Length: 493
Image (cartoon, rainbow, N blue to C red):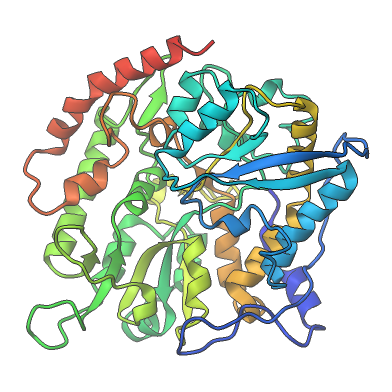
């Protein structure tokens, strides 16, 4: 992946000549309307091996729900507000339309949910009606169904798609490989919903200003570890009224502990499912070295929550959501797509990757410095039947190539006018986007017939009232998931 910091600095230079910036109005009231400007143009990739032509045909594209916002993936003229982000997405499509002569059609289905959309896709493919040429899946919902019924193509077999090109994230795709095949793609087209740690700079300065090293330097020097995050969280726990209620209290760390807490497993190099030397896919978190780490994390967060250093929004306990925007959270586990909303509040916020498990995980020779960040958005997929496979592949290749401007615009949208003044946060986002990771246990979480499988191990154990141990919890699922993977792979032709 490219070095985003270079683009951020370039954006700052280019934006200095623009009088009005986009999406960066700080106000006490949410809902500020964006002003408009032209998208920044930055291109430095080798041009794809795709000849200009005029197909005179349509490209039917479906975006599954819960992927951080459809507008990041698709933008027709009616949706385009003229903002930097909208214009960048729209112009990406326009460039592909002009280069290949394809018209973009946004496929929609009535009352679709994250775990039902695949039934519509299945029908379209099986009927060979040509109404779906490509799709963005949910991060795990419906994915197993589509693959097990042999309804998705292997990206490594698709013409015109160059998985070795820089704009295709092959390293990330390798984490989703199934017996040498790539049914799910990931490229610069995927504006990813990645979980990160946001922090309130004013609260940090007030309660952690005595640290010898800045928190950004902690990240750069490998000192940003689980222990350090806990140490910082313990600096802030304020019961404002003394009544033990949360409505006006302050906390060191807040979160909604579902997908956000899966990210700690990824960050700490704890795979849910991994491939053995024999080629089999098996539950890995139950292995001794991983289980001990996972159990430690569960106990740490239980203790922090009990001591009121943290506030986790549970469905059956806490109902108030205390986000960074409240001004009462020192740190908040959130997604990159949540940062956009923070621009509407008078809060000086910064961003950090999830911490390392310990200093041993640090790798100063790696561009991600050893950090690993869970990507929680959807994947590209190509149906097993399309009316014109070459058109589909060339369109996806060009969308990926032309996505550089969209990513630069996304940085502007997220950080707005703060880009030039916040080079440390730009550097943190650079580390985050260069350290995307997952494992097949995240995506194919339900292969044992268990609705949650290993995917929600951490939040399930952290829920109030849980009694069985982590070992007991996983042992109930391990054999089912392992046999589920065997059946799953055996049925793929």
